[in-house]
Image (cartoon, rainbow over all chains, first blue to last red; front, side, top):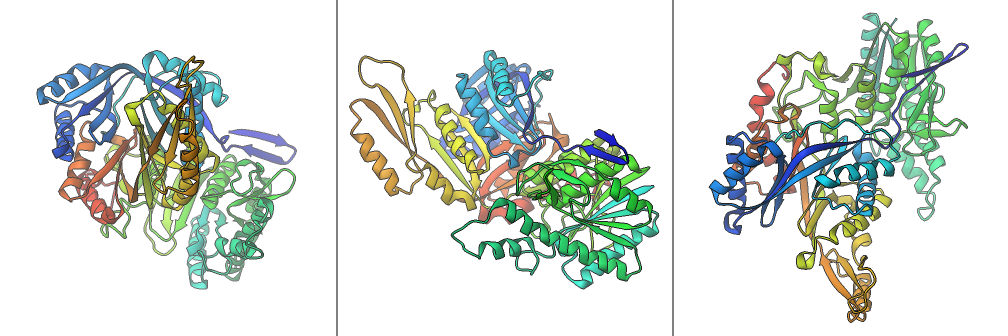
Length: 175
Length: 464
C-alpha cells in the first residue's frame, strides 16, 4: 500500500493497474494427443481418463477433439503415461519438452483484448501455440520448450513488463 | 477505533421494509462497538424508478439514434447510488443515528478517466475518518468516483463491491480492526445455485482465490475486483444476507482457515448462455492457424467481446462467446478474409487467403467469395466454415485444493455420463474444471456434479 501524507490529508493509492501484471514460464511439460475410435468416443475418453487417474498420473490442459482427446503432463510422468497408452493400444502422439507460458492479470474477463495481444506477440515472434487455457487471473499458452523464453520475452515486451518471474516446476492442475 | 464497512446491494434498499432491515444491520454493528461506513447500491433492479438500467434507458430514450456521451452517461448512472445513499441515511437518521451521506467524490475516491469502467487510483479517507471520529455513520454512494478534474465516473461491473473493499483498504491504517461486509439477498457463498440445487450449502469460509474463480466461472458472488483488493490489503470480507441472521461466508486467505474447515471442492457454478464456435482449417494446415486466430481475437478484442474456453490443437481451434454477442461476432467474422504471406515467389500460388464463414452466408461473405474466386489462379483460396454450437452453457467445479490430484476430470465426465449429459468441450486451470454442455442440461448437470462432489464439499465443517 502506498500512503501519501500532506498536512491533514492522507491518501491511499492501491487499486492495481488494469492489465497484465506478470508472465511466468513453467518448464518440463509434454503434450499428448490421443486418437480414439469414433464409435465409442465419449466412453473411450472417459475410460482413458479413469485409467490415468488410477495410475496416479496428473494431467492438465485437457481438451476434447472430434477424433480423441489431448492433454498435458509433466515430463517426469511421460514414461508412465506412454506405457499406459501403449497398454491401452491407443494411437497417440507425444510432443516433449514444452513450456507453459502464463500471462497473469487481475480479472481476465474484464480484459477482452488480452488473448488478442497474446496472439499478436506470439504470432509476431513466429511462435506456435500448441494449446491454451484460462483462469480468473491467467491465460496459459503451451509452446515448444525452445520457444518458451522467447515467448515470455515477447509477451513481457507486449505488456510492457520488466523483470522475469522465477519459473516454478510443472505441476498438474485439478484433473 | 474498529471500522466496519457494510455494503448493501440494490435489493437491500428497494423498499422501506428492506431499508429498515438494512438499518437494523447497521444499528447492530454500532451496538457491537464498530464505527460504520455504509456503501449503498442503486435502489432495485431493472424497472425500478431509480435503478441504474432505468436511468440509462431514460437517457438513451431521448433519441435512440444518438448515443449519450460516456461522461454524461456516468453522471446519470451515479445518480442512482446517490439517491439510495441519501434515502438510507435518512432512514438511519429517523432511527436516531447521526449520519453523513457522501458521493464517491466526497468520500475522496479518485479514479482514472475510463468512463463506465473507471479504476480507483487513490482514496483520501481523511474526511471520512473525521466524521467517524465524531461519532457519525458515514454513508457512501457505491460504484462511483471522480477524476482529478472533477468529472464523475462509474466503476463498471461490481462497482459497489469494489467501493466497499477499496474503502476498507483506505481506512485500514486508521483502524485497530477492520472488516468489510457485503449484504445481498443470499446468506453467503453457496456450493451451487440454489435455484438448481435446492439443498446447496452455504460456505462458512472461502478464500479470495476461490471466490474470484467462482465469479470468473459465472457465480454471482463478490466481484473479483473487490476480492482482489481485499486480498491485496488483507481485509476480511463477509458475504451475508440483509434478510436473515445467518453468519454468512468469511472470505480470507487460505492460511487463516483451519485445515478441517477447508474443502477440496468449493462449489459448482455455471455461466450464462454461450455459443461455441469451432474452426477447422482445410487441408490440415497448422502453420496458418495462428494468423487466423490472431485476426479473430483481435477483432473480438477491439469490440470488447469476451471469449471463453479457448482451445487450439492440430488444424482446429475453438472458443465460446456469450450468446448475446453472437450476432455481432457473426457480423465481424462472416466474410472475414485472412491473407497469408507466402513470401516472394516466381510462380503461383503467390499467396494464400482464408475466407471465414459462420454459417450465415450473408451478402458480404458471398461477395468476398465471388471476388476471391477470380484470383484463384494466383492465390490459394480456402473457405473455413465455423461449426457453431448454440444453446450451450459452461459448468465448473471449483477445486483449488485438488491441484495435482489425478482423476477430477474423470469424475466430472463420469458423473455427467451417468446423468446422460453430453460434453462438448472441457477446460481446466489450477482452480477449476469446466465443461461445455447443452443449456437444456444445466439443472441435470449441476445436480449430478454437486452430488458427485458432495463428500468433498461436506467432509469438513466448512459448509452448513
